[in-house]
Length: 65
Image 1 (cartoon, rainbow, N blue to C red):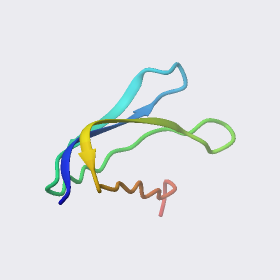
Image 2: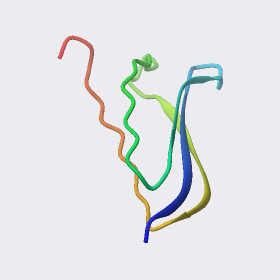
Image 3: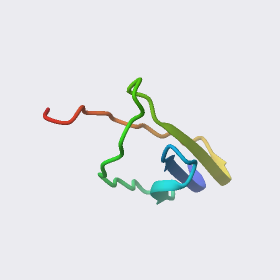
């Protein structure tokens, strides 16, 4: 069984949270826009509490797509 909580935080170039998504065993989807750095990269961190057998996915679409 999937259970627990998960938070995905996408960080800006200063390390501050630019976009935060929280979810439980039920699906949570949240679109948002985040700027990448000059190399086209962005950073994120995942925080899980009691999470078991879960998964997450980040889909990336360049601006103008």
